Length: 406
Image (cartoon, rainbow, N blue to C red; front, side, top):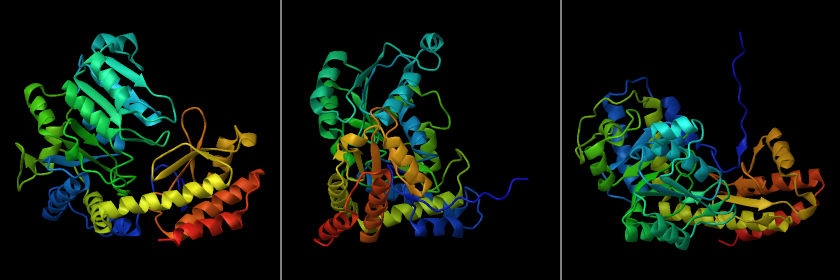
C-alpha cells in the first residue's frame, strides 16, 4: 500500500494557480456533508451567481460558474460554436493558442476531423498569429474581421503565456462594426483588472477560471457569462454537449428562461464543500473591492518589475499580476535551469511554455510587503547561486522604498 500523500507548502509565485487564502480553505473544510440540492448549498450557489455578476460588472442573467478548471469554463464558452461556423481567432501566446485549438475542434466537420483527428485545420477557422511578446491590437482585429467576415471572433484579454494585455476595446469595436459575436478568455484578468463586461456589448461570451483573480481553489469553479444573443442562438439551434451546455448549466444555478428562479434543476452533482469555498473567495474579492484590488496589483507589480530590472533582466510583459522577462544576455538559455532550481526549493516560478524561453514570476494573492520581499529575495538568491551577481541588499532596499511610498 502506498503511504499517505504529503504535498509540501510552496510559494506559488508563477502565472497561476496562486496560493489560496486560508479563509477559503477553512470554509471548504468546515462545510458539512450535504447533497447538491440541500437548501444551503443552493442558497450558496444563488449568492455566488449574484456576486459573480458584480465581479464581471454585468447584468447578464446567464452568469454562473462551471464545475472544473478554467478549461471547463472556456469549453462551455466555445460550446455554441458548431461545425462549419466561421471563426477568426487571435493568438499571441500558449493559452490563446490552446483556445484556438479548442475552437478548431468545435468548428470542424467530420471530414475535417478525419483529415487530421488530433490537430484539425478547418478552412472556416482563421488563426491570426501575433508574435510572442506583442499584444493583439485593435488594428489587427479590424483588418482580419473586415477581410474574413466571420460569425465569431476570439481573443484572450490577458495572455499569460507571454504576459501581454490585448486590446479589448479595439476587439469589441471591430466586432460591433462587422456584426461579429466576440468570445473572450478572461482567465488572467477577471478579479485582477478593473473592468465591466457590459461596457463591451459586442463581446457576447466571457470565460474565466478559479485559480487566478478569483483565488477560489480548491474548488475549481470557472466563471462564465453569456449575453442574450448567444442564448437566443442556442435556443434556435442548440449545441453538441450536455455537461457544458450554457442553458442547461444555468438551470442548476436557478436560471430558467432568462429569469432568476427559486428552484434549481438538476444538471450535475455539485459539492457543498466546493460551493462554500467558492462563495468565500467571491466574498473576499468583493470585500477587498474590485477597483482597489486592481490598483494594489499595479502598485506591487511596479515594485517587482523594478527589482527584476535591477538584476539585469529585460521585462517584456505589461500585465499587473505577472512579470515575464529575459535573463541577462550572458546567461541566455539558462532560463529553464534557473526555474527548475527555484521550484526544487519550494519557490514555484515558471518558464514560458513556448519559445523563446522566458521566466515568469507572479504575485497572485501576494499583495503584501512581506510577500514581495520574500519573492524578490528568493529570486535574488537564485540569481546569485547561478553566478549572476546581484546586490540583494540594495535591491531589497529599493523595493521597500517603493513599497513604503504609499
